[in-house]
Image 1: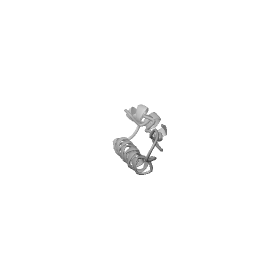
Image 2 (image 1 turned 90 degrees about the vertical axis):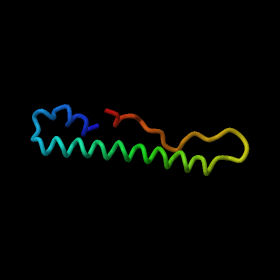
Image 3 (image 1 turned 180 degrees about the vertical axis):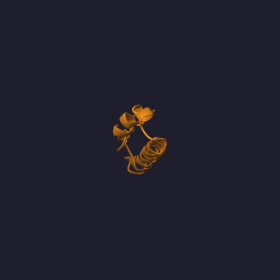
Image 4 (image 1 turned 135 degrees about the horizontal axis):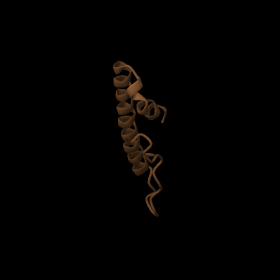
Length: 66
């Protein structure tokens, strides 16, 4: 969230700092997607053999969506 706030103020930042913030935000978005995928895989592996499936261990919040 702090990165997004910094990006809103991006016109006042140096170009190198703005580029670094964009790269960091992209990395965090990719990490959130990977974490959600791993959670789905683990949840699937731990699912009960009978009965309803359990909810995912981690659900993306969407905070990092731009």
